[in-house]
Length: 230
Image (cartoon, rainbow, N blue to C red; front, side, top):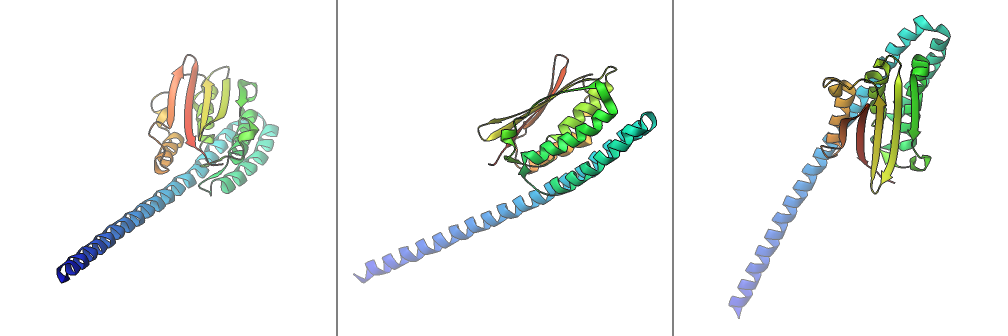
């Protein structure tokens, strides 16, 4: 009957129109999410770039003390400093990088600190090389090590201990950087390095508790959880 044909065409037209509206809305939402993600990644890169001069400034500050006390060690430290700069420029230009690159950066940083602190720095590592191919955002572990040395080990009269633990748990990487020495003041936990790290974690979609600082007896622990990619 013609009336049924008319109703059928009307229903079909309405269905097509509704489908087009919903598809257009979904497309707009996807474009908005993509634009927001690109903006967050761009901001994360800016914050990541801020870490390069911060790391170098702290390294050079330590060298000024070494130049007066041990010129020979200061000369060796300058060679290490150039390697650290090269590693920072290469490692810090990406949003994700193999964990081996972060290990290299931490090793270079510790090489400088060993020259400055000598026997006052006692280290222990639990960082399996089998994890080195996993990809994580750059400059996530180095700031924790730097903070532990600056506000913990270096502040203790007889120096102190530093422990770096990295392990793989499912689709996450667990990092714990622990140090002895005086308990950090609240302001120290909000320093540039840690504040920058927290902001980058937020922009990259990490949960609010991805980075946690706590005191356990004579140890200060900085615990970090990161999503990893094979």
